[in-house]
Length: 408
Image (cartoon, rainbow, N blue to C red; front, side):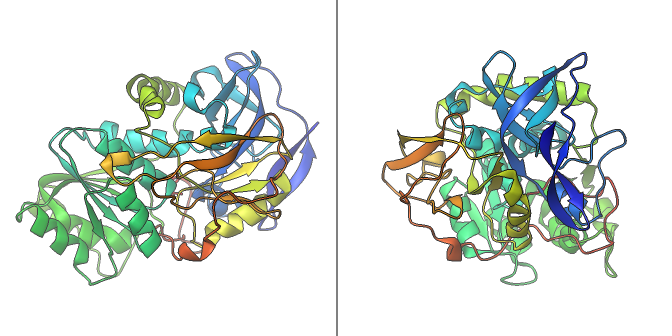
């Protein structure tokens, strides 16, 4: 038997269930940490059931111990918020520079694989192009900024609703920061000004109907809009598709959760081949907003996501485990000021709220085996800075399976 998190009457509840059975093409991972996604919030609320044949256990990504004793991460369609997880062999990701810190590693699969899929497989993003990243403070958004800026001679427009999120996007290397609520045409006016009236090559959007008009205005002729979520809904009274024809916009819709294992295997292999070395070089890193200790605290983690305060990923450690202190040097993504953006301040009741630390070396406590909270906070907690989320929560009844992606 094992402990796992299931949706029960609108809440995430820990239950004892049988361990997954070993089957061909899969391995059993002992989970150390799992990240929270919007899909988990929606599934608990009854708005986004798992694909047919997939477990009801919550969780789309995890890091843990594999049968050979190594540490790896995995992208799955469900089941990650549990003590054990059956993982297709082809879905396993190994990033040596993060293997000593499963909390950070657990924050990689969904955010970075989705970001790679959106930018390069769907959007065809390349050197010399420009991209608008809506929801720039989300887990996917922060990964998109980093991946986009790893391509030479690119321009990244980062749109985010909270001041802390916009500041963070700038730290990650975004070239132009936009507050979409400053005026009705703030996004399109800014993009047109910077591009001398041409518009951006690509828009990545998880908001949906509410953002469609501004997205279309902001694209160049023959530009591409990649829609990977509909968190503000699929319909609105004033939605017009005319810009698709007038500007010859290519509209690409995609989700990842419902993709089969062969697609995910190819995605993982492509990502690792192209980008794994960038983590070692400090060009890419997961952004963790907060870590919760123990599966019993999953509902708290979901509530934090519902509050729309997180910048980056929210991670749940599966059980109490032991930290050892290490030093982690600052990084300077995109040539910006140095900062550390993963495990930040800690306290006895919750672990690790990520806050930027400029120009310094941060002492933190990194996962080794099993977790016990440290007694002091190496980085001051600044939860008040995280005021708004840049991905709109789904309205009850507005989503059906396939309409929401893992926009975290």
